[in-house]
Image (cartoon, rainbow, N blue to C red; front, side, top):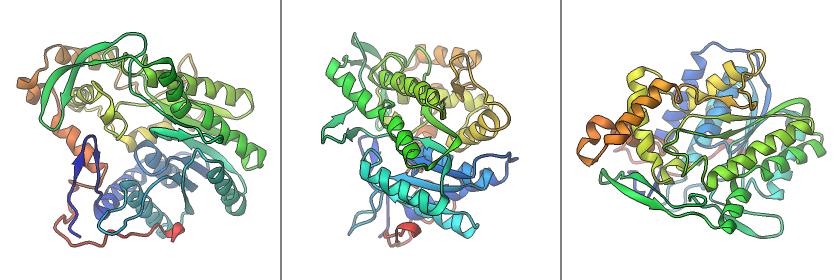
Length: 390
């Protein structure tokens, strides 16, 4: 196949194996080039195939020399359909890791399910004994619980409708959008999907199976953002889920395993692309932070998390015991400039007020497209094996 991007809504339905491999290689090379510190040696990453989860796995492996087990939920290629980008990312990571003498194994399945938890624990017990770090980085629109009930999350406000600017990225048009509030049932379902219940279930299962070191650390990821995005995020339905995630961190810690929430920077992900208002904010933020020389992607964020905030001495936290990787994003001078641009942005001045090209560059990179040095005219076999699943 000659593989080209096919975009539908806020996702790309194709992925490029060579492009994904090149992106993984770039992230590995970045970590190899940084100063290293001492850290965990046996790491479980739940949600390991894209974004912050993939970057966490790469950082643990190549900064700490850690053995890693990743839990993913991705599709292999089939017929004229490419594999998902997460599948290609994982295949590339395992190939590079094993070539560099690093243990890397992957479980592909629904991380919410008891079956995948048991399969993962069996692999840990067989190959590693116990793990000393658990990264929880799931991002899913729905969850089926043990009783067979399926819950779906929503991206809505809470209490009142909210009107603000948004962008039609495809047509590069700025307009107003009004987002309606979620019902109580929708809020509860969103908390079920994106809250802390499953994180707690994972830690409890690992402890019960004696597959978690007494000194282990676990971390999950969240976002707060500025006032512009609060009605849609921090104060919205997803924010209620993140509040529950934060409460879970405290409960996990109280039960004997040190748990942290890392509040990360706004970046282009499959999840953030779906949230009204947020892509326009990210486009403006990119422009401002790049001008200041403080822009970071997932791999730079995860390097700072593990080598500067979490394991280089005592963990660096705020008064709520959260790790603030959004510290550069939330600098007053950055947010002041973002707010100034936001107040006057319109379709006519997108080129001067926002980094739309940078947004699209990151979006297409998620699926392995637009990478220098990759031949996108090459006829490729889309069927690529993940070594540990072959």
